[in-house]
Each structure stands twice: as C-alpha cells, then as structure tokens.
Length: 339
Image (cartoon, rainbow, N blue to C red; front, side, top):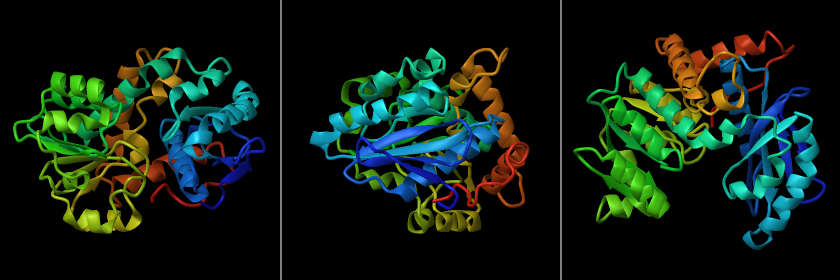
C-alpha cells in the first residue's frame, strides 16, 4: 500500500510494515512460508484508522516472518530479539497473529509498556466490541438473528455479548465447517465446546456441520465476519441474505463487495471500529474506568455518529478518523483500509 514504510528484518527473512513514520506503532506479526507485504500493509492501515477513530496518536504496524513450520520457532526467536529494542523504546507494540503462538512473543512481554490487562482481556474485549457494534448497527439486537463467520478465541465473549443483548446466534462457522440452529445456540454450550474442541466445535454443536462457506447462505439480520481480509468479495456479497455486516477482523470486505452490498441496502460497519475493543485496555485514558465499559461507550458513540452518513458508515468513519489524523500529521495516509 502506498506510503507504508517497509523495514526488512536482518536476523531472519521477513519485515515490519509501519504505516506512519516517526510515530509509535502497534500491530501483529504473522508467520507462514510467505507473508505478502501488500496484505501486511493493508492490516497496518486498518490499525492506523482504528487508533485515529479513538483519538490515539499511534500508527498501525504489521510484521511478517517467512518461515516453514519446522523453522518457525527459530525464526520467531530471531524476530523477537531484533524488534525488542523497538518495543522497549515504545516505537512498536506487537501481538501474535496467524501462525504465531502467544508463547513465541513471551520474550517481549517485559519490554511491552501496555498494561497487563491488555493481554489478559484481549479476547474478551474483542468479542465485546463486536457485539456492541452489532447492537448499535441494528438499533438493538433483541430478537435479531446473528451468524458468525470465522469464530475464534474471541467467539465465546461475542456470543455472550449477543445473547445478553437479546440476540440469537443461529450459525457458527470455522475452517472446520458451519453449525446452524434455528432456535439459537446456548452460550454455555458454545463456550464449553470451544474450550474442549477449538475450531472443531462445529461438530459438537451440529451433528453434521455444513461446509465453512455455507455460513454465507444463512438468512440472518446480522453477519459477523472476519476470518481473513477480503473474505466477502463481490461474489460472496451478492449471495448474502443479511441486513448488516459487522467485521470481527480487519478489512473482511473488498471494495467491489462493498459496492454490491451498498446497492442492496446492506449496512457495512467499519472494521476499524467494531474490532477496537482491546484498544481500551492497551491504551487506556486516565479516569476512563473499566476497559470493557469504556470500549462499549466509545464504540457505540463512534458508530452512532456515522451510521446515517450519506456515503455509508464505512466511508463516514474514514472521514472521521482522517479528521483526527489531520490534527497531528502533515499528510494523510494514501489509500483507505479496504481490501
């Protein structure tokens, strides 16, 4: 993505993408045989807009460590040693992403200035933030049917947040398949199945789960999606039977997909708002109180400001974030966070 600064690693094959120069940055590190710079740059841009939305002077970052599974432990050890000075100096805060176990970054914990609550409550706050965003987007989840694509570690908290607001989770999808329930899944059952079986929970929730992609054919009021960037392209968008899409991960909707959904009258919530829950533990404001309460209030307020925007909530939220960026940056990033 234009404007992103790519810093190549010297100790192992890989890079760190910084979206803003001369600014503190935060993001994730992913590992695979080949991590693409373009994709990492897009993730960094989404994070920049997340921080700007909630008025934090922080830029997005995204790192990639190119390593085969057998070589990954050594490569990640080299990565942590190389970036540790950046973490200690406050230039970079980094979280585990796809292909990186949390334990692989343990050596950076002491150098990380973020409160302990950030790591301890990350998944809980991520799920809560998405539930709050869904609730705001449909003006109340009571009686609403919700389908979840890409259920992950934040899923139990997401389900709890939906059900506590009166909604019903009627479909859950992982890479292992899609489970459906016309009556809605029970919170305790979902939580237990995830704890015991991980992504294979769909087989426990539904005796014969469907294919993973079948979640996109479920009729629901809300689709929560975010298994990977661009998972909702124009072809997927054309087949959806939902009124609102709420991202649970960065940039799940492509530009063409967004155009299709807008023509169909489907509301697309900005991912950099709905996924922001953990920010309120990692970058708390003095006196803001509990991070969960702070996240709920701020995410709700940010969405209510843009839901009726003439250009749609996603672009409306981009304008809002850019207004804050303009208060402390001479130039804006070139290109918006859209796959």
